[in-house]
Image (cartoon, rainbow, N blue to C red; front, side):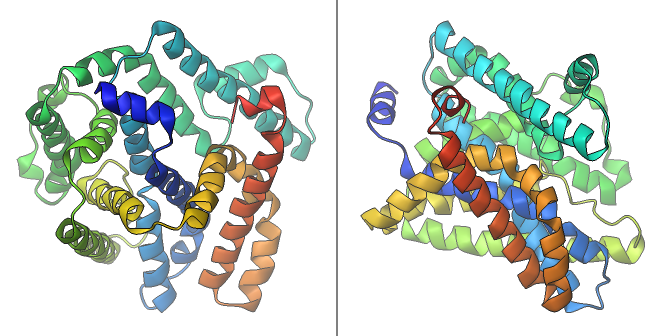
Length: 350
């Protein structure tokens, strides 16, 4: 454990930067693509392509949680460092949510009300993407306990925690959906950690206990592809049953989504061993370092560029149009974040 902490101090774990980029882009996909398949039916090929794209994007949140697990578990921070992390995320919520609040008041031609704003961020996220900041703040609040638990856990304890979360909170809801008679008392799961905590620990487990091997990587590619295909086919079945409400599998904690995210996470780890180009990892380092800022600003650029997307989608295949739209959001967010990181106090928030 001590060696790992020393290594992390000396250099970044570069594959995590690559995974940050992937997860950040998947967040943007998740917030831009769904309108395509929701406005079509399975008779259209675009419905199938868009739905597949959608389920790939659902890996974003589990990947972010697993990255945090790698970086935050396996050692114990001082309470000063813990409080600094908490303050960082709290200020991000406070400051960037205020930006979105002011923007919404401006577009609605309403005046800013500070009391209304404070009530807003207490009760809910100011913009669509910011629910994750509240989840992460909750994880940080419990981090001193999670860290002390992690340093005293062995491989089997990690496997037990992950298995319990995967079976009872990630798999059983799907089983019960198709077999209502399999439902069990909800009190049984009350003592468990949440599925998000299980995913948090899963990242640390993959990083420390799953070796990088060619045969494992090939298996991960196969499992990822089959898992995405399964989600698409099961969603098609849901559509046949209830065409107006068929996104049952749109749940980031289901075993279907977490499996895809875990295999993608592992493949990202393998990339560090395979790709040795210094230039490539420098580019990855730049965009990975901007990924949090891109995430914070993504909803603003999503709204700002929606008109451009509308024009593009009338002139070309909507999947190509939405990809250009997503790239524009990502690249603009990276450029603005890079500029903001030159400002001393703002840099600390990004």
